[in-house]
Image (cartoon, rainbow over all chains, first blue to last red; front, side, top):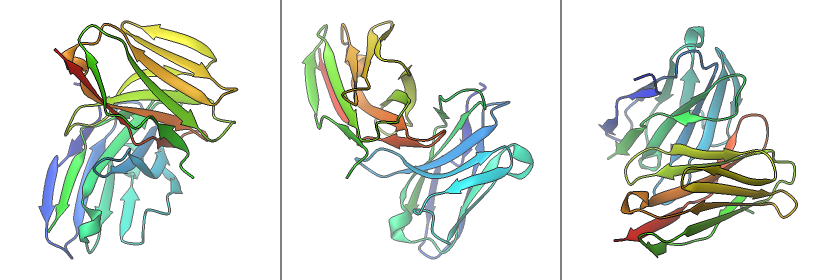
Length: 113
Length: 110
């Protein structure tokens, strides 16, 4: 399977804990995106990487959120001091530099108790 | 003001009928338009994209784009129970960032 992969698929954590999610994009896709989706809504853009450079961060991404993409391959999204409002599906997508179509991974469902 | 609006649904159609989903967008400069299908508890799956005015057909799916009216639609012909899902309209407003509508839930009655 050469699609986007994400790990873990589910995460339950207590409020105040830190969590980290990983995304592996489709091979040779230069662009990588993180989105967040809550129940009944479409995904909302969080951040975007082109190779290893983080080119945009949404206002939704508070100081508690940080994302990295070392060496332009996989990416991590860390949430520090989680809050109940962080409970959502965190989606990763990738696209080639030459294309506009974005392909999503299976997502990580975060529940903060 | 929301950037992408979809008809609220839910939409219930009998098996074999045509399901019609509509989407409007606010930015007249938008160039790229996408339809994603999302089954309950799963992630969005890209099913159609359209960049030019007119119709684009892929199997039982047809996407229609009218940039002058800022309107994009998706028709699902010969609807099957497996088409029951939420359909998300998405628009790229700049080079890369997708903006999504809230989705329309379709139920195909056997």
